[in-house]
Image 1: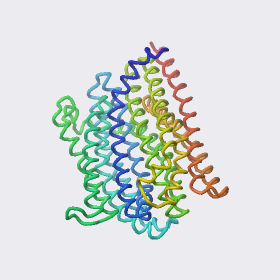
Image 2: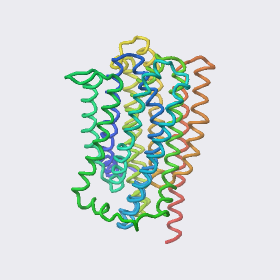
Image 3: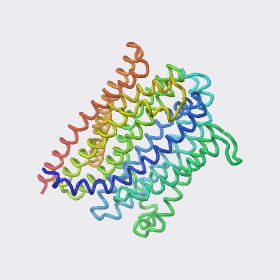
Image 4: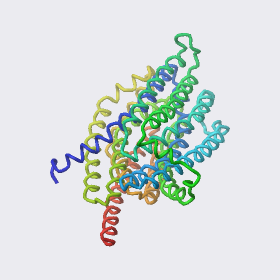
Length: 452
């Protein structure tokens, strides 16, 4: 295949991925702004924000994984013109999201008393606790926003989520400035102010989405058909059969990062603050390729619904090319500016020096991180979600964490050793997901033509 053969697929993938990338980057930039502002309060405050987010993000991403089940199923129903089926997926997905959110919030609140027992410095835990409570409260409106977002992504529309995210992120940054530092007559709440600003912006997000969908007749018609008859345990089980494995795979991956963050905390506030800086930059880089991954899930689910396997392969390959090109450039930028980037967050020389070391590893794993993300995006589009859980367990729990611990505490590399574990874990995940999606596409294609 030549570049000209792939060009239409690059364009279509980018048309969907572009708004998602901007939306995801908007969220990362907001978190970046949070940490820059909190970082100027002090190293302990930055470490506290890192600790609270490390615990919170485990529950948040598990819940997001559950909501992601609707995108490929809605996408396939949409291209096949099965509007009744689409409505059923939508309504049952809403029920699933609400029930999941309640359970996750209860579990996150249940974790609160154990924060003192995670071997973190006492002053870090003391600051982290109230900030953590506010984050947990913000989860409900944030997941309702994600419910709307996954619905529209299933239809192939990604622009409105981008617009809402950008607007609410700007609101978040403004309220951060007011409430963290107490400017223009607002109370000076420090790290708690950052949490309140996040809560305000997350409450706005689903409200704005509902207003937009209500004004669009083609979208609102699916909501207007909601009824008791549409609720179905069969559909709920189908959503769960896709959503739980996605959530499980995400949980394993984020648990490796979260547990690594807790291990860094054992080393002290300076390593934890350095870890937070490197993780912020790594997350921003990941959000770019995550946009490509989401677009890949949409494109693959649509082509699978149409049984067009040639277009499916081309769309998947085009995403891989885009990912490799993008992450190669990002990796070079991180490696080139790793000594300068930490200076934006803090003036602490020890934190700056260690963060620069950790960013070296962040630059090195960009290609493998991108490949594993696009690989899992292809598999989700194929609704092949169970095998990736096994691969995630092997990559992140059996390889990433033990290697990180070994180099950090046995070979005395400290935080750098933990980040070296990421290089190995993400590399193995990229290889396993790549071979799996190629095999699965061939299996689905063969099975389809046998029935024709």
